[in-house]
Image (cartoon, rainbow, N blue to C red; front, side, top):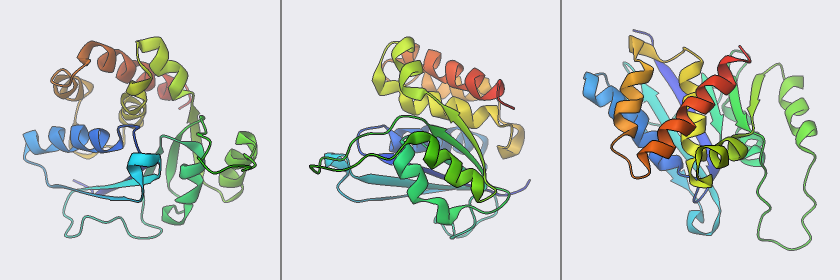
Length: 194
C-alpha cells in the first residue's frame, strides 16, 4: 500500500478536526496506520487551522513542505496560504467560499485570481461551492463533509476504502442524515470534474 499525505486547511469553526477524525476512524477500523496532527492559531476566532493526515508506513504526523499528495481547502484564502506544501503532482480540492477576516478595511482578493495563481504553478485544482452544497444538504455546518466526499471521489485513498465505510462513520455523528447527504453531494461534485 502506498503512503498518502493529506493537508486539510480552513478557518476555525469549519469542522476541519472532525474531517480528520472521520478519515482517521475509517483507517483505524481497518487497522491501517494513520497519523493526524493539527496546527492552529486563533481557531475559536476564525483563525487558520491545518490538519495533517498521513496514511501508510509513516513515522511523523506532519506533512513535509512540498510533500502533500492532496490539499483539501475548506476556505479559499487559507488554501492559497498552504501552497508551500504542494508539488507538481499535488491535487487541490478547494471550496470557492472566502471568509472575510475580522480585520477592518481588508481588500478581499478575486477568487478566480487565486485559483489562477495555483494553476500557474502547475498545480491541479478542482473547485467546489461547498457552502452552497452544505446549505442544500441542510446545514452550513456540513461544509467539512462536502469536502470529505470530494476527497473520497479522487480515488487516491490507499487501502481500497469505500464510500460506505465513510458513511458508516458519518452515521455516528450528530446531524448524520444531513452530513451523509453533504458527503454524497461533495463526492458527486468532484467526480463530475475528473
